[in-house]
Image 1: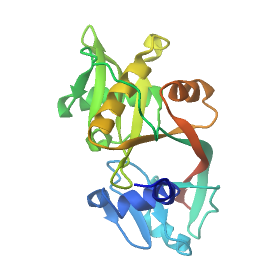
Image 2: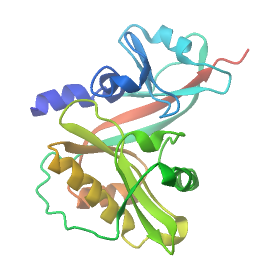
Image 3: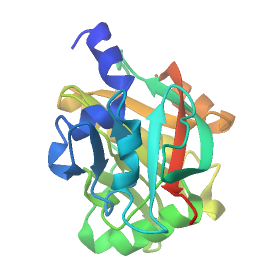
Length: 232
């Protein structure tokens, strides 16, 4: 895929994943689309159809996350719960050699409760009951305890895959575990011909420096806008 094609896809990653390679995960498609809430809260609207987003919210405590170039106004029937600046990064020339790391293990359904606990403890991004099913996740255990993990999430087009859910237990941070796990995830992407990309909170300078050391470059700034139902 050309750089121009990557740009068109990554400018609107949610809309493209839910109407593209991961369309099977969408519960709604077309002018507005939403991923299965058990996988995550992501949603998108085609230009001019933002007013239809309210129909995607299923309950008073439900929320949807929009990833766009700027903060989104609340369509009728919704309210903005919070916003956050993001930095989208891409490793479009992954020439680095990836050494085998035998301590890292593939995580499966039996590991899901521990994965959820680690994600909720460290808050790397939205995590739901089936987030672990997006793709392959790798983890590191110490004395049987899951202390770090990373995996994949969005595949907005063939040839692109997102590194996601990079997290390390608070008492094990600063030991280079995140870098080891990201390298393993990236190795899997490269082996199947996918270019890695990711999203970081823009204020997380420490994480951004790590990603840069692994071959990622800043591609563009985005904003996540979280919408809920309007208060009665």
